[in-house]
Structures are given as structure tokens and as C-alpha cells.
Amino acid sequence: MNSRLLKKLLLNDNHTDILWWNAFKEGDRQAFDNLFRRYYPVLLQYGLRITTDKELVSDCIQDLFIELWQSRSSTSVQSVKAYFLKALKYKLFRQFRSGSMVQSDASADTNFELSHDQFIIAKEEEAQKVARVVAAINQLPNRQKEIVYLKIYQGLSYEELSEVMGINYQVARNLFYQSIKSLRALLQ
Image (cartoon, rainbow, N blue to C red; front, side, top):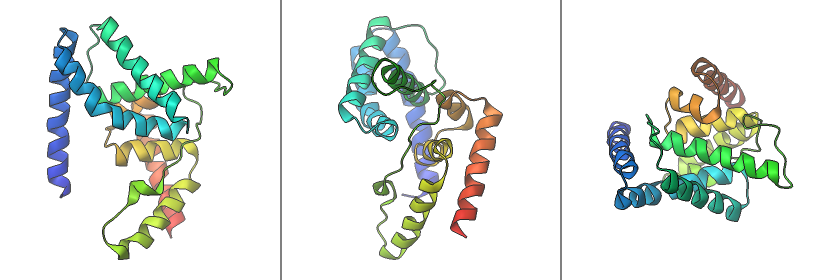
């Protein structure tokens, strides 16, 4: 699938998400179910970058959706995906603070790992390049790994990045730029 078509589909997905979000706020159970089915795998994948405890991540995602359904607040969102990612991140950090794993705050450096399966490519000749990129990304500081994952693999905008990571817009741009600059240096 070419990148232009993928971008167009993503824009349509965001529009659809907003429609489902607004319908869900009005009490539409089917719209809520659609959001859950669409975002559960994305949230699980993201949560497993923060912690390897799959059961904890799954429980937090389910709690998030239960709380959303019960409150159905009038929260207006620009990006449903960014809203869910941020909500899950904070929910996991609250779990860490109350459990045995302690995080100092929600913007702390997390042990954020990218797995090799994110880079599976059909052509064997590209596999070596991919391995180099993975090795280089895993050498980045944790915040840089997270922003590369969110920007490139989740397709978030800088506004969404700043919301999810709890940083302002310019810091998000600077951090991503610095991450790419570091990656280039590691890959040379």
C-alpha cells in the first residue's frame, strides 16, 4: 500500500473516530463497541511498550473503557487515538505508583522498547537495513524511542505527540528532530 493511500485512509479513520466518539457520548453502544474493537489492539501494543505485563495492560484498557462508558463526559477530542493513548499511559503510571513498580511521574523516562516485529518487511534484502535501524533505535534514550514509535509507527501529529507525552508542541518537534538526528548518526 503506498504512503499517500495510507495517509488518506488514516485521515478518514480519524473522521470516522470522531463520529463514533460523538455518537458514543450520546449513548450509542455500537459506536462505543466500534471504538473498543478498533483501539484495543493499538492500546495493547502501546501498553506493552511501557510494561511487559500483558495482564496489567489488558486490565487497564478494559478499566479505561468501562470508565469512559460510565462517565460519558462531554470531553471534546481532536484525535480519539491520542486521547486513548494518553489515557492508557496515565492509567498505567497510576498502577505503577500504587504497585511495586514506582514511577516518579507520568512524564518520566520509561523502559520503552521497540520489538523487531514492528519492522518485518517482505523483501529479504531490506531485512539487514531493518536490523540496523532497530539496533540504532534501541540505542536511543527512552523518550526518543517513544517519540519515534508514536510519530512513525502510530502516525501521530506533533499536537497528538505533545498530548500523549505530556510535553508542549515545540518540545515534541525538537525531541523528534533530535531523535532523527541521533538515529542518522548511529546509522552512519
